[in-house]
Image (cartoon, rainbow, N blue to C red; front, top):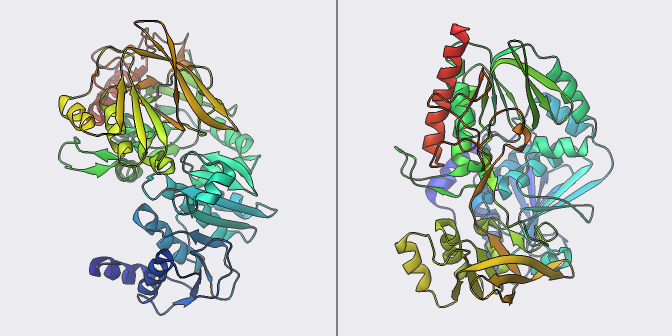
Amino acid sequence: MLDTNIKTQLKTYFEKIVSPVTLTATLDDSPASAQMLELLNEVAEQSDKITIQTSGHSKNTPSFTVGKTDEAARIAFSGLPMGHEMTSFILAILQSSGYPPKVEEDILESIRGLTGKLHFQTFISLSCHNCPDVVQALNLMSAINPNIEHEMIDGALFQGLVDQYQIMAVPTVILNGVVFGQGRMTVEEIAAKLDTNTAARDAEKLSAKALYDSLIIGGGPAGASAAIYSARKGIRTGILAERFGGQVADTVGIENFISVQETEGPKLVMALEQHVKAYDVEIMNLQKATGLSKSGEEIQITLENGGTLKSKTVILSTGARWREMNVPGEQEYRGKGVAYCPHCDGPLYKGKRVAVIGGGNSGVEAAIDLAGIVNHVTLVEFDTKLRADAVLQKKMYSMPNVTVITNALSKEVLGADNKVTTLRYEDRASQQMHDIALEGIFVQIGLLPNTDWLKGSIDLSPRGEVIVDQKGETSMPGVFAAGDCTTVPYKQIIIAMGEGAKASLSAFDYLIRS
């Protein structure tokens, strides 16, 4: 199951095991159980500090637990942790053994201070690139706090549990039997959500920070580039982000980042963060800006938690988010049939009927991907024709279980029993209403800039983009902008990085001249 190269790597990793670890499996006569036992044996062979037992009594079969040999296990895997989740498995072994996690001490203290029994379950799909972040975060928390337990559940393997909890998107986290959250979450985000005093402490710490020379708002490619260029000038630099990496963290395949033939969003985000941390940049993650103002030569950023930051210059690189249909029922059924990532959530709709909203490249690519999983795909496009590349259209039209409807205006999402059942649309030619019976709707209609909080502070275009000149300057002196949140055309990673560098150089020029 594991090739020689992987086994060699595991031997090296397992040299870091602190105390003996036991893997306890619950198995039956199924092929999946045989695969699991084969995987566990091959992993255990790479270290004499790993022992296997087959005496488990979990409700879920096949499954296994990971724990220090002399303690009750608090980490479980229901399903085979392959693909993206293999790393989660390896880290679980190391951290259960006592190997220290690479997390800031104040976060660890917050986790250690959590009281009461917290039993987490994370529903994943093995094709989901955001799921491992959540699994690894909760495994880490379980390893360092005896009050916390965590179980990874492969939704494709345990359909009964998926139906029981009405899971329609991954990752979905259940805490003590109740939905705790959906989507990508870091250990910092989870700890902050559980520790209600975090926001007040953060606000106090942030407000006490000294004046920055350059403060970047947003941690995507544009923000990372701006931070590096600013720090290289030797000026006091800070970067504030809701989550480092931004939209790129949700991108699966990247094949047009020049000099790198192929990579994945999470890998690129990790590289960006490591590069930024190589410089003297103060990173303030999980923080949301809500206001921008200027008094004299100081620019002030107001934060959602009530804190404030001050800087001589500011670079806005807040990026963009998925555009929504903005129809009745969309928000009500978000994560319950309305989805935005076909790669992540597609496996949950195996054998079902779904719709894709949008006829651009992303919409047609989603229809192609889903057609290999679901029973039937209906692609719904507002325009009279599709806008996707011809080669993608040809591929999609060759698939027998894809139907295309053009000149259609999506009007409403309907559902029953907390699940999507129907997409209602209007034929724009005849004005007649039609209903499509389905279980899932994947929205693929582009992006919206994250600039709502800037309205009234600086000039925005009719589309909400920050208006910038050729140097990245905005209508407020000392404030610059870069990336997908601006009027610069072509929203591409490589363009955002270049614009971030330009904005940083322009901000430095502003500093030395003023």
